[in-house]
Length: 307
Image 1 (tube, rainbow, N blue to C red):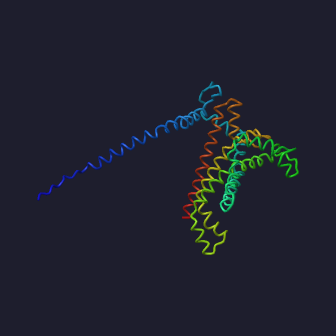
Image 2: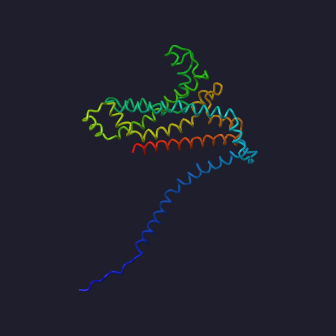
Image 3: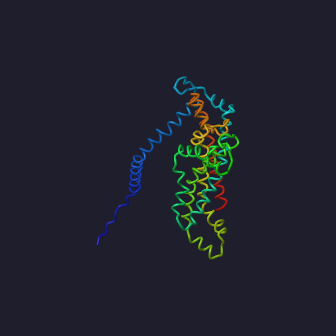
């Protein structure tokens, strides 16, 4: 009986594998190409164009378009109104982030542990987040904050100018924003709570753990990644605040609530200085990038320490 031994085909398998990989790469690029085109056209190109405009003296009509280098940035850093608006943005972020995170967690814990009409509580907490900013602004401006017939003064028995007092206007904007946007954080926390394995709580109950022990040893550690995500998203959203403040106070009284985005808007579309407004916008952009990187670094160190 004759046995035929096939000749080794060294190099053919790697060659075929390389062809398959190249084919998949080509097909993958075809699938990604539409998104890349949209990404380049509506994000990368406007970003580069805005950076170029920040280095020029162009106005809203597109005239006087000459490069001035970093003159716009130097003027912005020497402008006390820019620093005031930037400080207002930081204050709003500091005042709104903490209650938005804590209340979102508290509401999620309450709804998660309720045994009746959960759908009603979910709708109650998440419903305001679905309202447009114009609706929220009109609601609070016309019904909640009026000094003579507003719901807030009527409940407290006072006649406080909530939006007319420079010392209270920012707090009033924070209160409106918390009521409006806490539902998003609530929904994220609720989804995270429902993904925690139930057997962890059952094992803790067998060991005699109390409700506080379960919260401290199981729930909060299992929500650490969700908390990191919510804090980062909330910081970014608060630093970009504009709609409700512009519609309700216009930055007043006495520029007490004007955020930096509204200042850039005023410079670009009221004073017609598009180049200077672009420079102010990129100052905010750098601030957002720095805050995001610092926050990610802090949470990464915390996870490494806990592991």
